[in-house]
Length: 187
Image 1 (tube, rainbow, N blue to C red):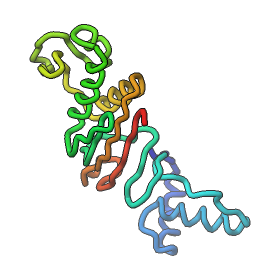
Image 2: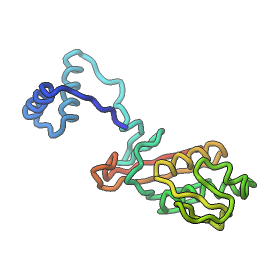
Image 3: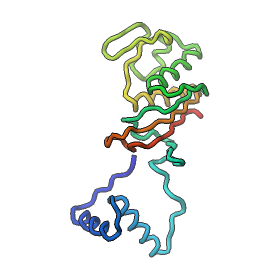
Image 4: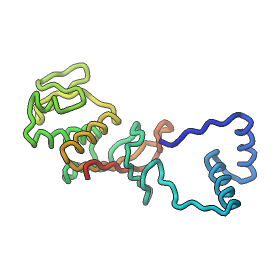
């Protein structure tokens, strides 16, 4: 997540005036320009460009070391244990990761007990639970951020490589509307 800076009304008004002179369109662009000019006046330069939102960005895809805000995202492609899943919802990535734990010999109560999301070792539907016969357990639905947290936790605990390339919708509430990101776990 990007840092939030609070400034008083008078400074914000000054910033808007400076933006007019610089021809910048956003407060962030104006501040960037002010900082750049101050660094030049002091004879300083940045050692390296900061990475976008704690990630490494290239070709309009940002690879995140730590999960950004995942609301309003959907996977573009995913793989679990080096097996491509294609364009599937976050839930399918979670289920594929859980299936890898099951393949390690965990079933029933033992499999449900390994999960940090609500799960039952028997068929249970209602209250957001759905039964997955291929896993033999029922799991309660998860938000995207919670699904990724569990995917990441399981992947790291059991050494299951997971890669998800995802995109944010053009929703103004999305952290990076229209952008694409990549998350990796246990890779």
